[in-house]
Amino acid sequence: MSEKPSGGTQLSRRNFLGMSAAALAGIAIAPGVTLYDLAHGKPPGQATSGRVRWGMLIDTNQCSSGCSDCVTACNTENRLSGGTLATDSQWIRKLELKNTRTGKAHSLPMMCQHCENPPCVDVCPTGASFKRADGIVLVDRHTCIGCRYCIMACPYGVRFFVHEPVTGQNPEVPRGKGCVESCTFCVQRVDRDLEPACAEACTAAGHKAILFGDLNNPDSEIAKRIATYASRQVREDLALNTGVRYQGI
Amino acid sequence: MKSGFTTMLRLLTALLFTLTIAGVSEAAPGDAAPSGRVAKPVLEAGKGDKCVEDTQFMRRNHMKLLMHQRDDTVHQGVRTKQHSLKGCIECHASSRNNSVIGSNENFCQGCHAYAGVTLDCFDCHTSKPGTAPPAASPHGQPLASASSTLDVKPVSKP
Image (cartoon, rainbow over all chains, first blue to last red; front, top):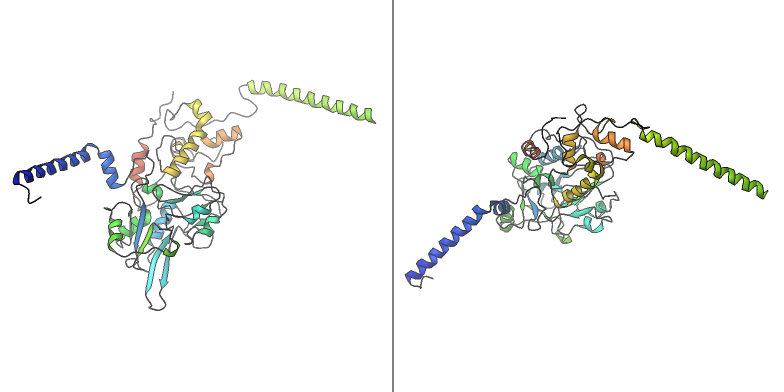
């Protein structure tokens, strides 16, 4: 390029500027497409896209022991009882871990890991347990027969069976007796371009331990962090390629 | 012995036949009468003056629309309000108990009780219109703006 005559350089520069202008015009002309792509939001009538894969990066160094802001936010959003008995649903719960050799303690939230290859979907006899195009693993309660195979298949122990009749649900989060349920990444919020309640609460409280975003978009904060820092999946040996990653464990 | 059995059979057949005729003739005027044997449900009108579809169409087909929309919503994240159960509830919740079920005057329950059709949507779905969960959630704004897109006009009944 630098060896070309100056005229050629000017021409290519002009071409470059022209192309840049065209690209900018493209953004301006079709904001409905381009800007939605950038923000990864979608209009309510549009189906979810397989180009997106929602994921979460949890920085365990920022997650303090005893803090349960994420759990509270989840319970509020999804109207869970907040009970911790074996029969209570805990879509997200805090784990306190300690390396017995080094003494290093970790505190981290554990919820549905939204696997790329979810065992719960593999074993479901009715197709109620499924993965959305954007990677969110859900239970279709209309098809769930409450057999609980998925609870047994899940290596993370994050699925729960509803044992009692439920009242006072969030209109966007139906829940009822006889179905299995788990963290939905607050799918009702994600569809409105909001982040899950736990991530929002964690950020709002200033902990910044939970980062939510699109793993497939190289420009997203989460993809950059994963590309820069070491992160791990829980039970990596199972090769489930989880959507939830942990930093610092 | 055999003739006795045949006679009894004939008698029974005749009895059954008579009963059937009686039943039909009794039912026919009952259906034609304005009040009917089962009282027609008295339902509170919705908040808007117009449903998202024609009323007669909705009577026959609301369940198909809901079934279709529910699959689109759960599996593909389509959250339009046109045929959503949430949209129905927002418009049809009673002004008395803010619900579509609870008594036979409530919109969903009233008609389902009349038709004798089990209604199990509300085993899982709330029967009350959307309210933002308490505090710390930005639900209020998006929900409010979304409800304005619902194809329902302010109350003005004929």
